Image (cartoon, rainbow, N blue to C red; front, side):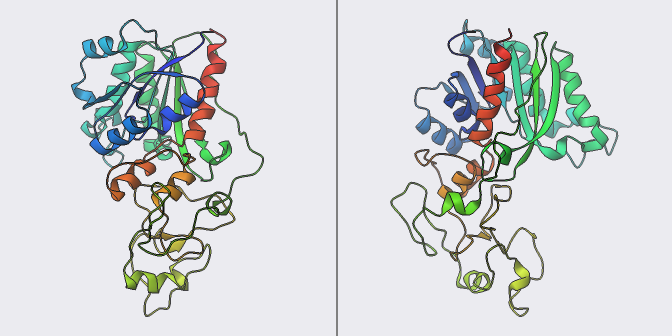
Length: 332
Protein backbone atom coordinates (compact mmCIF):
# COMPACT_ATOMS: atom_id res chain seq x y z
CA UNK A 1 0.00 0.00 0.00
CA UNK A 2 1.15 3.56 -0.68
CA UNK A 3 2.53 5.68 2.17
CA UNK A 4 -0.30 8.20 1.89
CA UNK A 5 -3.70 7.50 0.43
CA UNK A 6 -5.15 10.46 -1.47
CA UNK A 7 -8.68 11.84 -1.31
CA UNK A 8 -10.99 14.49 -2.75
CA UNK A 9 -13.71 15.99 -0.53
CA UNK A 10 -16.89 17.11 -2.32
CA UNK A 11 -19.40 19.41 -0.55
CA UNK A 12 -16.67 19.76 2.08
CA UNK A 13 -18.50 22.24 4.33
CA UNK A 14 -16.49 23.11 7.42
CA UNK A 15 -14.41 19.96 7.01
CA UNK A 16 -15.61 17.22 9.37
CA UNK A 17 -15.14 14.51 6.75
CA UNK A 18 -11.74 15.90 5.78
CA UNK A 19 -10.61 16.07 9.40
CA UNK A 20 -11.40 12.41 9.99
CA UNK A 21 -9.48 11.32 6.90
CA UNK A 22 -6.64 13.73 7.69
CA UNK A 23 -6.33 12.27 11.19
CA UNK A 24 -5.86 8.82 9.64
CA UNK A 25 -3.01 9.97 7.41
CA UNK A 26 -4.80 10.63 4.10
CA UNK A 27 -3.57 13.40 1.80
CA UNK A 28 -6.07 15.93 0.49
CA UNK A 29 -5.82 16.66 -3.25
CA UNK A 30 -8.66 19.16 -3.32
CA UNK A 31 -11.94 20.04 -1.62
CA UNK A 32 -14.89 21.96 -3.02
CA UNK A 33 -17.80 23.89 -1.50
CA UNK A 34 -19.89 26.90 -2.50
CA UNK A 35 -20.86 28.49 0.84
CA UNK A 36 -18.48 31.43 1.62
CA UNK A 37 -18.50 31.11 5.43
CA UNK A 38 -18.14 27.32 5.25
CA UNK A 39 -15.15 27.83 2.98
CA UNK A 40 -13.70 30.40 5.39
CA UNK A 41 -13.83 27.84 8.20
CA UNK A 42 -12.35 25.11 6.01
CA UNK A 43 -9.50 27.33 4.82
CA UNK A 44 -8.69 28.47 8.36
CA UNK A 45 -8.42 24.93 9.70
CA UNK A 46 -6.81 23.36 6.61
CA UNK A 47 -4.54 26.15 5.31
CA UNK A 48 -2.46 23.76 3.18
CA UNK A 49 -5.41 22.16 1.39
CA UNK A 50 -6.46 23.15 -2.11
CA UNK A 51 -9.99 24.49 -1.62
CA UNK A 52 -12.15 25.33 -4.62
CA UNK A 53 -14.89 27.83 -3.74
CA UNK A 54 -17.32 27.11 -6.54
CA UNK A 55 -20.63 25.58 -7.50
CA UNK A 56 -19.75 21.98 -8.30
CA UNK A 57 -22.18 22.11 -11.26
CA UNK A 58 -19.86 24.69 -12.82
CA UNK A 59 -16.73 22.59 -12.30
CA UNK A 60 -16.04 21.08 -15.73
CA UNK A 61 -14.62 17.63 -16.34
CA UNK A 62 -11.42 19.20 -17.64
CA UNK A 63 -11.10 21.35 -14.49
CA UNK A 64 -11.51 18.26 -12.33
CA UNK A 65 -8.73 16.53 -14.27
CA UNK A 66 -6.55 19.65 -13.98
CA UNK A 67 -7.00 19.99 -10.21
CA UNK A 68 -6.11 16.37 -9.60
CA UNK A 69 -3.31 16.60 -12.21
CA UNK A 70 -1.55 13.23 -12.49
CA UNK A 71 -2.51 12.06 -9.01
CA UNK A 72 -4.11 8.67 -8.62
CA UNK A 73 -7.04 9.27 -6.27
CA UNK A 74 -7.76 6.55 -3.76
CA UNK A 75 -11.12 7.81 -2.53
CA UNK A 76 -13.70 10.51 -3.21
CA UNK A 77 -15.76 11.44 -0.13
CA UNK A 78 -18.73 13.73 0.43
CA UNK A 79 -22.35 14.20 1.39
CA UNK A 80 -24.37 15.85 -1.40
CA UNK A 81 -27.34 17.85 -0.08
CA UNK A 82 -30.79 16.82 -1.26
CA UNK A 83 -34.29 18.24 -0.83
CA UNK A 84 -36.28 15.99 -3.14
CA UNK A 85 -37.65 13.38 -0.75
CA UNK A 86 -41.21 14.72 -0.72
CA UNK A 87 -41.65 14.84 -4.49
CA UNK A 88 -39.57 11.95 -5.77
CA UNK A 89 -41.45 8.71 -6.18
CA UNK A 90 -44.85 10.31 -5.66
CA UNK A 91 -45.53 11.54 -9.20
CA UNK A 92 -43.75 8.94 -11.26
CA UNK A 93 -40.46 10.80 -11.20
CA UNK A 94 -37.28 9.05 -10.18
CA UNK A 95 -35.40 10.47 -7.20
CA UNK A 96 -32.22 10.92 -9.21
CA UNK A 97 -34.11 12.88 -11.90
CA UNK A 98 -35.63 15.37 -9.46
CA UNK A 99 -33.81 18.65 -10.25
CA UNK A 100 -33.45 19.30 -6.52
CA UNK A 101 -31.25 16.23 -6.28
CA UNK A 102 -28.89 17.16 -9.09
CA UNK A 103 -25.98 17.23 -6.64
CA UNK A 104 -26.16 13.44 -6.41
CA UNK A 105 -25.54 13.37 -10.14
CA UNK A 106 -22.62 15.74 -9.68
CA UNK A 107 -21.06 13.38 -7.14
CA UNK A 108 -21.44 10.53 -9.62
CA UNK A 109 -19.98 12.69 -12.40
CA UNK A 110 -16.86 13.50 -10.38
CA UNK A 111 -16.36 9.82 -9.52
CA UNK A 112 -16.70 8.96 -13.22
CA UNK A 113 -14.03 11.52 -14.17
CA UNK A 114 -11.62 10.85 -11.29
CA UNK A 115 -11.96 7.03 -11.29
CA UNK A 116 -10.92 6.54 -7.65
CA UNK A 117 -10.45 3.07 -6.24
CA UNK A 118 -13.18 3.85 -3.69
CA UNK A 119 -15.84 6.41 -2.91
CA UNK A 120 -17.77 7.16 0.27
CA UNK A 121 -21.07 9.05 0.09
CA UNK A 122 -22.97 10.10 3.21
CA UNK A 123 -26.58 11.18 3.60
CA UNK A 124 -29.58 11.21 5.93
CA UNK A 125 -30.77 7.81 7.13
CA UNK A 126 -34.28 8.16 5.70
CA UNK A 127 -32.83 7.93 2.21
CA UNK A 128 -32.27 4.20 2.84
CA UNK A 129 -35.96 3.30 2.84
CA UNK A 130 -37.25 6.25 0.84
CA UNK A 131 -39.85 5.29 -1.78
CA UNK A 132 -39.83 1.70 -0.49
CA UNK A 133 -36.11 1.35 -1.14
CA UNK A 134 -36.33 2.40 -4.78
CA UNK A 135 -34.29 5.56 -4.20
CA UNK A 136 -31.44 3.54 -2.72
CA UNK A 137 -31.56 1.16 -5.70
CA UNK A 138 -31.52 4.09 -8.17
CA UNK A 139 -28.39 5.54 -6.60
CA UNK A 140 -26.61 2.18 -6.50
CA UNK A 141 -27.60 1.50 -10.10
CA UNK A 142 -26.18 4.82 -11.29
CA UNK A 143 -22.82 4.00 -9.72
CA UNK A 144 -22.91 0.47 -11.14
CA UNK A 145 -23.42 2.00 -14.58
CA UNK A 146 -20.01 3.69 -14.29
CA UNK A 147 -18.26 0.51 -13.18
CA UNK A 148 -18.55 0.49 -9.38
CA UNK A 149 -19.69 -2.20 -7.00
CA UNK A 150 -21.69 -0.49 -4.24
CA UNK A 151 -23.10 -1.34 -0.84
CA UNK A 152 -24.73 0.88 1.77
CA UNK A 153 -25.57 0.70 5.46
CA UNK A 154 -27.01 2.94 8.13
CA UNK A 155 -24.33 3.78 10.68
CA UNK A 156 -24.76 5.42 14.09
CA UNK A 157 -22.07 7.94 15.04
CA UNK A 158 -22.34 6.98 18.74
CA UNK A 159 -20.87 3.57 17.85
CA UNK A 160 -17.56 5.27 17.01
CA UNK A 161 -16.98 7.46 20.06
CA UNK A 162 -19.15 10.42 19.06
CA UNK A 163 -21.30 11.61 22.01
CA UNK A 164 -24.36 11.83 19.79
CA UNK A 165 -26.92 9.49 18.25
CA UNK A 166 -26.68 10.44 14.60
CA UNK A 167 -27.78 7.85 12.05
CA UNK A 168 -26.59 8.29 8.49
CA UNK A 169 -26.67 6.14 5.38
CA UNK A 170 -23.18 5.48 4.06
CA UNK A 171 -22.61 4.30 0.49
CA UNK A 172 -19.22 2.72 -0.16
CA UNK A 173 -18.22 1.82 -3.70
CA UNK A 174 -15.18 0.30 -5.32
CA UNK A 175 -14.04 -0.41 -8.86
CA UNK A 176 -11.83 -3.21 -7.54
CA UNK A 177 -12.81 -6.85 -7.23
CA UNK A 178 -12.92 -7.14 -3.47
CA UNK A 179 -15.32 -7.29 -0.54
CA UNK A 180 -16.77 -3.99 0.63
CA UNK A 181 -16.37 -3.50 4.37
CA UNK A 182 -18.05 -1.17 6.89
CA UNK A 183 -16.70 -0.05 10.27
CA UNK A 184 -17.81 -2.10 13.25
CA UNK A 185 -18.88 -0.61 16.57
CA UNK A 186 -15.70 0.49 18.35
CA UNK A 187 -16.97 1.50 21.81
CA UNK A 188 -18.40 -0.60 24.63
CA UNK A 189 -20.21 2.34 26.22
CA UNK A 190 -21.62 5.45 24.60
CA UNK A 191 -20.18 8.81 25.61
CA UNK A 192 -22.70 11.03 27.37
CA UNK A 193 -23.41 14.74 27.01
CA UNK A 194 -22.22 15.46 30.56
CA UNK A 195 -18.95 13.56 30.08
CA UNK A 196 -17.86 15.78 27.20
CA UNK A 197 -19.40 19.14 28.17
CA UNK A 198 -18.88 19.36 31.93
CA UNK A 199 -15.36 20.81 31.63
CA UNK A 200 -16.46 23.94 29.79
CA UNK A 201 -16.82 27.07 31.94
CA UNK A 202 -20.47 27.84 32.78
CA UNK A 203 -22.06 30.74 30.94
CA UNK A 204 -25.17 32.83 31.40
CA UNK A 205 -27.36 33.90 28.49
CA UNK A 206 -25.33 36.26 26.26
CA UNK A 207 -22.05 35.69 28.15
CA UNK A 208 -18.74 35.17 26.33
CA UNK A 209 -15.59 33.21 27.16
CA UNK A 210 -11.99 33.08 25.95
CA UNK A 211 -12.55 29.65 24.40
CA UNK A 212 -13.09 29.90 20.62
CA UNK A 213 -16.81 29.67 19.70
CA UNK A 214 -17.83 29.25 23.37
CA UNK A 215 -20.22 32.21 23.39
CA UNK A 216 -23.72 31.87 24.82
CA UNK A 217 -26.73 32.92 22.80
CA UNK A 218 -28.59 35.93 24.11
CA UNK A 219 -32.07 34.59 24.92
CA UNK A 220 -35.21 36.59 25.58
CA UNK A 221 -36.46 36.87 29.13
CA UNK A 222 -39.61 35.04 28.03
CA UNK A 223 -37.61 32.06 26.78
CA UNK A 224 -35.48 31.93 29.94
CA UNK A 225 -38.59 32.09 32.11
CA UNK A 226 -40.11 29.10 30.29
CA UNK A 227 -36.96 27.01 30.31
CA UNK A 228 -36.17 27.45 34.01
CA UNK A 229 -38.97 24.96 34.73
CA UNK A 230 -37.51 22.24 32.50
CA UNK A 231 -35.24 19.77 34.30
CA UNK A 232 -32.32 17.72 32.99
CA UNK A 233 -33.70 15.66 30.07
CA UNK A 234 -37.12 17.27 30.44
CA UNK A 235 -39.45 18.87 27.91
CA UNK A 236 -42.19 21.48 27.47
CA UNK A 237 -44.62 19.43 29.54
CA UNK A 238 -42.81 20.72 32.65
CA UNK A 239 -43.53 24.35 31.73
CA UNK A 240 -46.64 25.72 33.51
CA UNK A 241 -49.65 25.57 31.22
CA UNK A 242 -50.06 29.33 31.20
CA UNK A 243 -46.53 29.72 29.78
CA UNK A 244 -46.26 26.52 27.77
CA UNK A 245 -45.88 26.81 23.96
CA UNK A 246 -48.99 25.39 22.31
CA UNK A 247 -47.36 24.32 19.05
CA UNK A 248 -44.03 23.95 17.28
CA UNK A 249 -41.30 21.39 16.85
CA UNK A 250 -41.32 18.76 19.62
CA UNK A 251 -37.51 19.01 19.59
CA UNK A 252 -37.82 22.54 20.99
CA UNK A 253 -38.20 23.51 24.62
CA UNK A 254 -36.29 20.49 25.87
CA UNK A 255 -33.05 20.01 27.76
CA UNK A 256 -30.27 17.65 26.84
CA UNK A 257 -30.30 14.49 28.95
CA UNK A 258 -26.94 14.61 30.69
CA UNK A 259 -26.43 10.85 31.13
CA UNK A 260 -27.08 9.89 27.50
CA UNK A 261 -25.54 10.75 24.13
CA UNK A 262 -26.93 13.87 22.48
CA UNK A 263 -29.88 13.89 20.14
CA UNK A 264 -28.86 14.47 16.52
CA UNK A 265 -27.18 17.87 16.14
CA UNK A 266 -28.72 19.93 13.35
CA UNK A 267 -28.24 23.42 11.96
CA UNK A 268 -30.65 25.00 14.44
CA UNK A 269 -30.40 23.92 18.08
CA UNK A 270 -31.40 27.25 19.62
CA UNK A 271 -34.32 25.91 21.65
CA UNK A 272 -32.64 22.82 23.07
CA UNK A 273 -31.07 23.88 26.34
CA UNK A 274 -28.03 22.82 28.35
CA UNK A 275 -28.81 20.06 30.86
CA UNK A 276 -28.26 22.40 33.84
CA UNK A 277 -27.43 25.92 32.61
CA UNK A 278 -30.32 28.09 31.45
CA UNK A 279 -29.23 28.61 27.85
CA UNK A 280 -28.80 26.80 24.54
CA UNK A 281 -25.48 25.15 23.84
CA UNK A 282 -22.70 27.25 22.37
CA UNK A 283 -21.23 26.47 18.94
CA UNK A 284 -18.19 25.06 20.77
CA UNK A 285 -20.34 22.67 22.79
CA UNK A 286 -22.31 21.59 19.71
CA UNK A 287 -19.02 21.00 17.88
CA UNK A 288 -17.87 18.82 20.79
CA UNK A 289 -21.04 16.75 20.45
CA UNK A 290 -19.99 16.29 16.82
CA UNK A 291 -16.50 15.20 18.04
CA UNK A 292 -14.61 18.25 16.75
CA UNK A 293 -11.52 19.14 18.83
CA UNK A 294 -11.39 22.46 20.71
CA UNK A 295 -8.71 23.86 18.40
CA UNK A 296 -11.02 23.61 15.38
CA UNK A 297 -12.36 27.15 14.93
CA UNK A 298 -15.61 28.03 13.17
CA UNK A 299 -15.90 31.28 11.21
CA UNK A 300 -18.85 33.40 10.04
CA UNK A 301 -22.01 34.40 11.88
CA UNK A 302 -23.29 32.33 14.81
CA UNK A 303 -26.16 31.07 12.67
CA UNK A 304 -23.72 30.01 9.96
CA UNK A 305 -21.45 28.37 12.53
CA UNK A 306 -24.37 26.31 13.85
CA UNK A 307 -25.24 25.27 10.30
CA UNK A 308 -21.64 24.29 9.64
CA UNK A 309 -21.57 22.13 12.77
CA UNK A 310 -25.00 20.62 12.12
CA UNK A 311 -24.21 19.75 8.49
CA UNK A 312 -20.94 18.01 9.33
CA UNK A 313 -19.92 14.41 9.20
CA UNK A 314 -18.61 13.85 12.76
CA UNK A 315 -14.79 13.60 12.52
CA UNK A 316 -14.66 10.51 14.76
CA UNK A 317 -17.16 8.74 12.53
CA UNK A 318 -15.15 9.84 9.49
CA UNK A 319 -12.04 8.34 11.12
CA UNK A 320 -13.79 4.97 11.46
CA UNK A 321 -14.72 5.08 7.76
CA UNK A 322 -11.18 6.13 6.81
CA UNK A 323 -9.79 3.13 8.69
CA UNK A 324 -12.01 0.83 6.62
CA UNK A 325 -10.77 2.41 3.37
CA UNK A 326 -7.20 1.82 4.59
CA UNK A 327 -8.04 -1.80 5.37
CA UNK A 328 -9.59 -2.36 1.94
CA UNK A 329 -6.68 -0.58 0.25
CA UNK A 330 -4.25 -3.06 1.74
CA UNK A 331 -5.98 -5.74 -0.31
CA UNK A 332 -5.38 -3.88 -3.59
